[in-house]
Image (cartoon, rainbow, N blue to C red; front, side):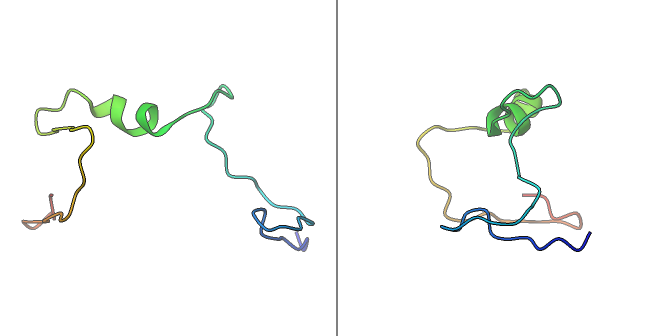
Length: 66
């Protein structure tokens, strides 16, 4: 549209931009758990561990599965 955009995270905000949001279609907050984990929580090949740190992810096969 020809309107300059600025970094909305900068100290001086002037201009216009689309603001990234974490909302669902109803305007409610949509966090990582509800967006990504909950839909696949019952997969047999998914193992979720609390307080863990990943040091390496190995992708194998023709379709690069981890």
